[in-house]
Image (cartoon, rainbow, N blue to C red):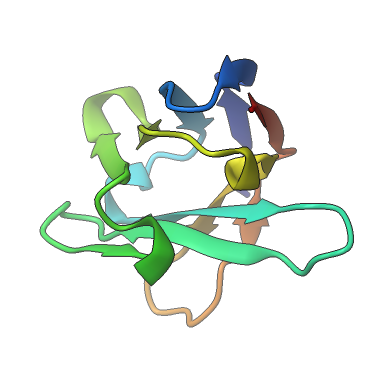
Length: 119
């Protein structure tokens, strides 16, 4: 069982920055693939970014490359999402998720944290 708790919610003006954090339980954290997703009302959940267990590989939604950066600190069991040059369209509930080794999908999700970008 993995528990995830996001933090860093906030209201920010367009052009500003915000960093989200997600703390995870579990002794095997360093082996997890971690991802960030987001959802806005009326839309399906959207992939934002992911990072491999070793941090050697990172993946981003094409539309977010260059503005968002995912990173992890295995010593703190925490994954981060640094968001720069924020736009009103980035307003959403952001979720972190865990994909266990040997599995194909994200099996554990946080409760979500609200990011609001004002114009």
